Length: 119
Image 1 (tube, rainbow, N blue to C red):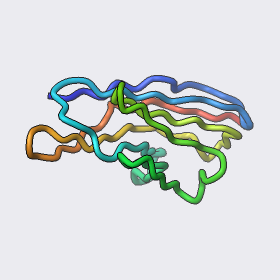
Image 2 (image 1 turned 30 degrees about the vertical axis):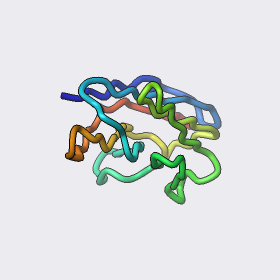
Image 3 (image 1 turned 90 degrees about the horizontal axis):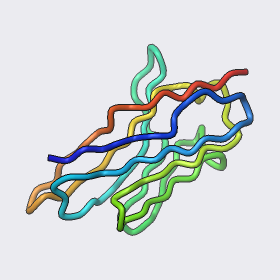
């Protein structure tokens, strides 16, 4: 099995910064894409940022220019640096990893970490 452990959530004032971390552990051959998603109360889960194995990235329009995704392949980890946070960024943030195990690809999710941005 594979586990994703997230850390770095919390309460911050508008304009502040936070950094999320997510590390994958377990039976892993390699990891393709890794990403961050978020879900606000009453809303669907949405993509925040993704990073592929070649380090190419993609961001939601709402966070472009404020958030930066990065990864450390040696640690099977992905990070999200969030700057200039806004109240509308308040949500539970989930890490996602596309893990290769043997000849199969599996999708794993972290347990989620709450981010609350006060105005």
